[in-house]
Image (cartoon, rainbow, N blue to C red; front, side):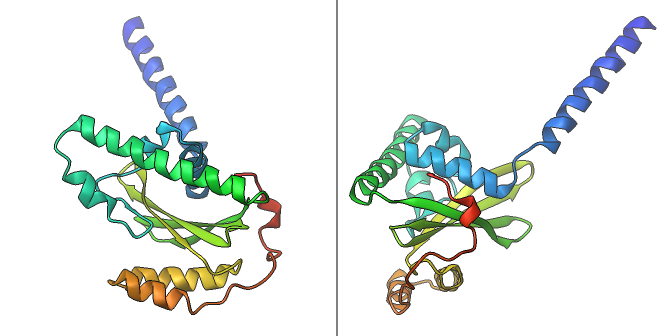
Length: 196
């Protein structure tokens, strides 16, 4: 009887711990922010946050290239190279533009399976969008897009919609170039200014 009670208590406490972990789990915006920081820093921990089999980064079909690789070791090298390339490019931009700030993290689209999180980047005049997939209990980044509408969040979302509808990247780029960057930084989201 004591053994049965002891096993029940272990199961009960284990369930409480797991339930507590679920309650403090980060939301999709926090998940995207954490991914962005790791990705920009060149931290390979970002690789575990990506669904490589479905990934599309900056209008590049990463998944097709990745899925065609013949072995796990080559895939790991590919993951590291992509993270290194992005991080090096971002760090280079940080040296060119001294006042880069990231602000206005927000949920842009809240579909059951795919969430889209947006963030504005001052001085690069870009809005980045992170596609967060929810399949079962797994949450993964399946896409990253960057658009250049100046600092206007509404224009950025319009451009994102065009990208999602366009099968032709060149057509999308031509359409995106028709949007003129607005000057200044919008007031909304200012409380969320972070260095990254």
